[in-house]
Amino acid sequence: MGLAIAHRFAAEGATVSMTGRRKAALDAAVEQVGSRGIGMPGDTSRLDDLDRLFDHIAERSGRLDVVVANAGVGDYGPLGEITEEAYDRATSINLKGTVFAVQKALPLLSPGAGVILLSSSAALRSVPGLGVYAATKAAIRSLARTWAAELADRGIRVNALTPGPVATPGGNDLRAAFPQSDHTGAPIPLGRPGRPDEVAATALSLAGSQSSFTTGAELLVDGGATQL
Image (cartoon, rainbow, N blue to C red; front, side, top):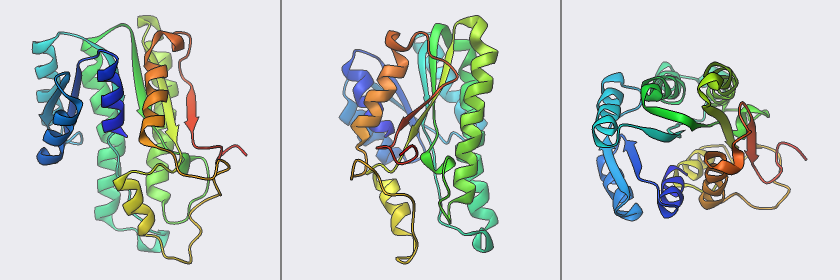
């Protein structure tokens, strides 16, 4: 989804700075995005890496108009099988990474900037085996409300973008980890998983002037799974 968002923003004329833990994957993403893509390897759960990322952006452009906090991981694990390693991985990347990425972006955010936090429909419905992942995504929704209030006087909008099941390599791997007998969620009324480009289109809408009066909101891109 992050790659699709980067593609869409670049296609609209934005310069897109991307970061990721896997250098080979990041290099491939920059190549796909093209001349408007900039890659800076790093782990969003490591504050030193975030400092390097935002120092690089400050030196290059001096400002940010949009921040998309997209990094996220999840592991299948019912309550009796949750490991400390899986808990630390999910909370460090999904929650700690989001908090400090946005915090360190603050000095660069221009008046009227937009912050988009990626949540998940798992936070809105019971999906057995995804308790920790869902909890981190529910926390992200809460952060969108709080930060929207805190940043309103700067004209900075903060919103949550909440996808349902989307056909991505990471999402497909997570769903494949479920036992065949498990029910992994309600049927999708539109009858199919979402596409990354559909999430990207929604991110573009939240980032642009068409959402200039929208903040603290949650925009669902889930084929109706949580509402119908």
